[in-house]
Image (cartoon, rainbow, N blue to C red; front, side):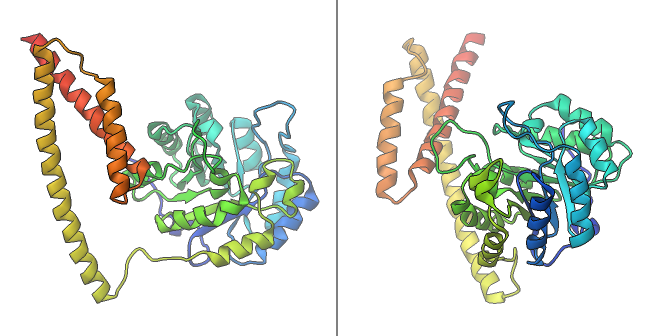
Length: 366
């Protein structure tokens, strides 16, 4: 079944400075002074459109800082009144939605911990029926594109067409410099499926470390994402949650100044002509790759028949390990990234297993 989303273009409902949409503010609203001081400093840049602050904080441990609750919404009302910044908060249930709407919050967002639970998302969707308010949906904790799409669908089915997605990275068991693995291929796939859906990036939660923010923010913009959500705190080291990933407002201004904003097209005829020539070369190489892959799979089928006729298992672990090692070494000598070669080999192996299984199943049916 084809999936469709009815999306109102971002520019039709949100006025912001030229360039990507920027959302910033503290991980959590802690005190009125902290919220107001941060907002005043952020507003000075003139680049930020929306002020974010966590009012209800979903924490792993019950004795962690879980937010100040509804009183923080009054502080956001003051932020909007004094600075003119729009406001956004995370909501995880229908009560949060009701409180946020009552206090005039401009945009709601659904966090990663909520996106994983269709029951919670549906509860929020039901509470939003008949309401005209923008909603942002963060990706789920695990790299499950269908779960992310499902949450977006539920909110869209409630009549919300001012919809955005937020890429905040995915939990991974592998050791990494990132708090959450970016896995850029997933938001790219989402963007490919729904070109009309604005996608923002949350570098703060991807990095977990303010030193990496510029690099990730630039990568997101280079991938043509529509904006950034970056956490900023008047005194990050004293923050009650996620201190390491928050910037001071001054640090935020410096980061924004360091970003290169690129266009997704160019009117330069020389550039366009040269680009088309290079793309033609790529097309030809891809066709040759596909022909070679087809020849490889023909051999794979013959191997499957040979194994079947000799009563041998499909998976040959020793051979598979040899392929991984030899192809990785060969790829490295050719200047190819090791992780890319590994993923490529794994895809080939997966398809080879499928092909050989198909051969054996077809034989069994005869």
